[in-house]
Length: 83
Image (cartoon, rainbow, N blue to C red; front, top):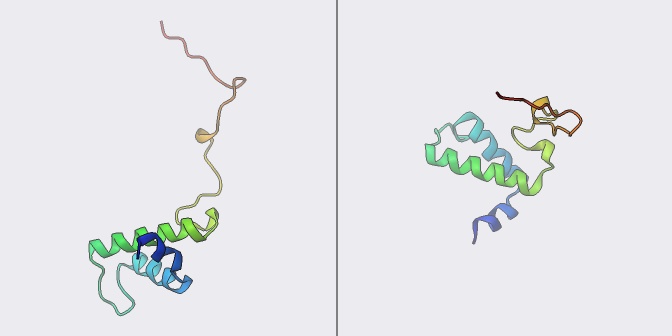
C-alpha cells in the first residue's frame, strides 16, 4: 500500500496518538521515539492535517498575518532613491 493511501485511511484516533507522541517525544507506553520515528510521525501528522482538516486546525496555523506580509498597492508603495 502506498504512503498516501495509508494516510487517507488513517483514523482520527491514530492521528491523535501520533500527534501526542510527536509532542511528548514518546509512545503511550513510555518508550522514547527515535529521531527517525519522530520525523515519520511528524510527517504523517502534517500530511493528515493537509488531507483532512481545515487550515485553521493545522499545526502552526496563525490566524492574523503580520503587516509586513501584506501586499503593498501602488498607492502605498514607497520609492527609495539612491544617489
